[in-house]
Length: 120
Image (cartoon, rainbow, N blue to C red):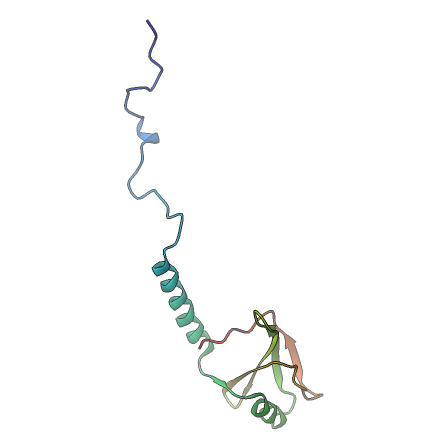
């Protein structure tokens, strides 16, 4: 009576069959996110090398002993704005975070960065 529709009850052609391993993960489990965060942190540590975190007063002292210090500055914070500073001196990188902007030397070369992320 009624003609069967094409494809109904018939095997799909090979091009349309589901191939094993072709499905993609559409969500990330908490374990996947934690593994990704750990890998990101490990890569950040490799990229930075040794970073010394100091108080803002110590950071100012480090700046005062350098002629024309190079300083990266960024604003950060989620609930409160803070100011992040990064410089190097004698082979070490120094980082500080301050709730208020620091007074920088007049001869400093200041680079405004989008963000400064230091691994914990």
